[in-house]
Amino acid sequence: MKRKFVFATNNAHKLEEVTAILGNRIELLSLKDINCHTDIPETADTLEGNALLKAQYIQENYQMDCFADDTGLEVEALNGEPGVYSARYAGDGHNAEANMLKLLHAMEGIENRKAQFRTVFALIIDGKEHLFEGVIKGEIIKTRRGNSGFGYDPVFVPEGYSQTFAEMGNELKNKISHRAIATNKLCKFLNSIQ
Image (cartoon, rainbow, N blue to C red; front, side, top):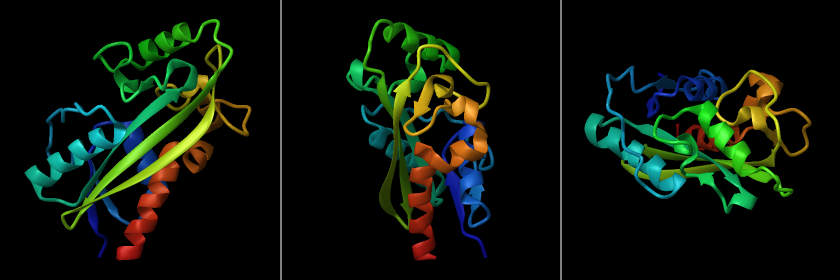
């Protein structure tokens, strides 16, 4: 019988990505699936802290094994910004377009375009907490390219590639992305304990 886990997210894109990476190894439930309609606060000042806050909320309120993630785009020339505030960079509205425009504006005239996407998963299973990290390095380009993906995908080109995440399509992105790296670590761990 497949083990059930709650992925503590309302982000349909993230759910789709992680489901594609996990395949049919475990049964993945969303917050909607467990009737959790709370906007779980992300008040920590690190990705690790936010991921743990979300996972702990589900564990405490629903008593289910679960995992949650937080992801940030960390730009070297901006001292790691937007980082933990990536989703709210241009305000609390979680407006991806506004966030991307603010980033491009902040990068105007800056030669150093190095950046990295970093995802941290916090897993709570059998009452124990585990963290898994995925990082992909790359650079911020000056103008957006591509229509797939979400968030900052149209302006991020991963190292070793010429296409942005938004140009390469989900199949390739889901093999090489920060979330894929962290999810694969999570899967390896889950497979080792089943």
